[in-house]
Image (tube, one colour):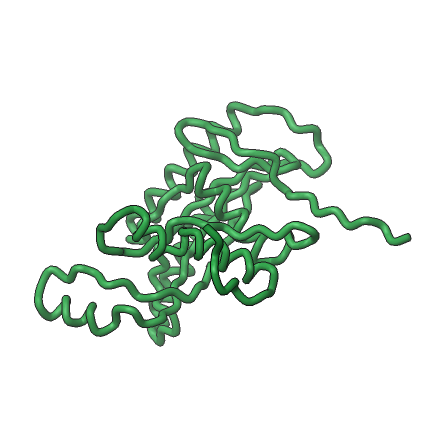
Length: 225
């Protein structure tokens, strides 16, 4: 009889220190996830922009020093270009021209992890967390100076991002399939809550469609009341 495969998530929870939500790993390592605006335009031919971003990441590594890991992740999705208020005539016409078209959206995340000795018993170290927090402040300063609009993810955002990564890799599909249903980061006209939920795919029909897609089946023709 084949052994049952069990997926063990590498994170045990989220801690809070000095106003920052920290992702705690199963081995005691601590991570902070920062969402940034990638300054390099997709398919850009401007080599200088790539060099500047590479230099920025090198500076982050130097600031963190030994014992830390840096991981950059890009989440690429296809979305519908929203109709934005341009503020002036030409910009408004530009926005109207592209509104409703599919486009590729890239969300960039930087994960900074404080490593611990492998196999060591985890011990709470307030000094290590304080040092981590101070270095994180320095990293945020250079990211702000580089105009990357950095934002440290809070607990709810961390939970959502982890579930998205696991779902995209199919790591939750062994008997259980998980799909995140959230209000998308798009601009929409103010309307009744039920209308806005429907636009975001969070109404009854949208939820049922998501379930059927996860099961690999076509959506139901109708939804019972």
